[in-house]
Length: 210
Image (tube, rainbow, N blue to C red; front, side):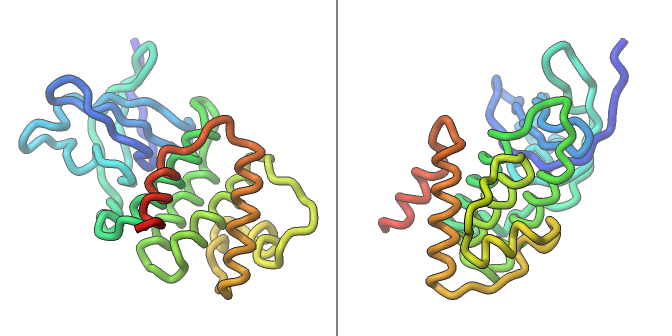
């Protein structure tokens, strides 16, 4: 008989399933990325309504099955609902979540990726840096975590990001020129590594053209 387990993580995505259920992809500290079925999450007054939302951080009690997990209970720690009030911030959060989804997998702990994603969401909500700067810094640091970052001569801000611990990834200020350099570097490195374009990139391009 499968034993229930408790994990801490962030919901990367939440999709509709059947009439009342949801399918969640959660990045966890302990097990990396896992697929979780939240049965009845769309029913009125469901105990899973608050936690079965994209970008929600919390603690989740899971029952393992053959190919996925079933949500038994959950405690929300932070929802990041404020990001939904800013279209570019929300799309940027989606961009970061998609990147993490691309690189992580089940069975490989995701502590560093989880911490970086949390800090990106916090920084987007603070509006201290532009969403473009947050996305670029996130991409550069994530590529470094995954061992995919090349080390030729980088702009000064990128060198700073790469030299700092994760909790200081977004502790910088940028001129417009430095931000453009950082964005160009992130785009170049991602073009080299990714096998397919991110869905959120199309949304961000649409917002930029408005």
